[in-house]
Length: 256
Image 1 (cartoon, rainbow, N blue to C red):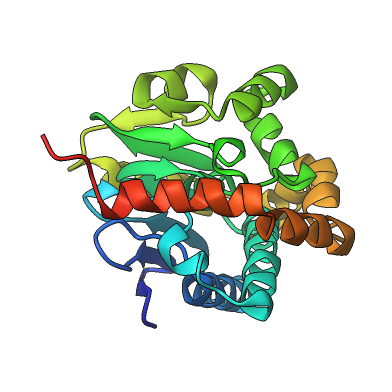
Image 2: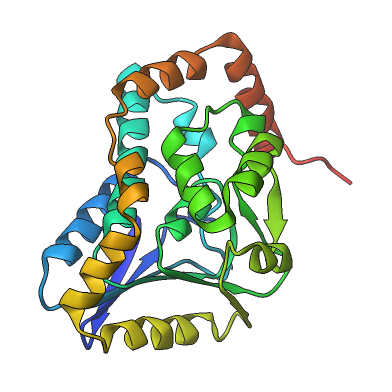
């Protein structure tokens, strides 16, 4: 694995996102994450999952600098894999807890939202979905996932604003379930997931899937038409202009 670190102990798997300082999501990370999670779901020796990041960053979201340069086939593969990654995490039948170690906007937020429980490090961090301001169409499946935790009204408003929440706002709005010191995030995530793992696995898993039945119908729906629309928008001059401005800010920060 080039973008993930994997540790398995006493039937608990921990995936650590491991791609540079900020863990930006590219096609390689998506491919590895989908494959790893599917393998863990099929492995009877694994009873639960934690996904975590690095100090200061869970994941900064999509690696716009790399993804902006993808050709037509690569960007189609990227968005196809991105939606599959979301569906894979939402449908994961075993306990999954996200240990959010820092900033988690956009794609990072979506990885975390697939979890049954989210613990976020206290500090000057942000989490949320800001796709619209950078020119990316929000799929219905993403809205449904956001709504599952926030409720439709807030999800609708926050998506249209591209609102990013600080840690306290995320806790108050139900986007995260608990806040802890950075040193304690992973320990508390392990305690939580192991509390789920103590229950009867078949009963717990089927109940989870039942509770997510409607959500699963959205994230697993055919997305081919939506993808065509997203790709048209991605290559439009207006979107390319917005993305280039964002990339310029990332690569050429304002000097004080």
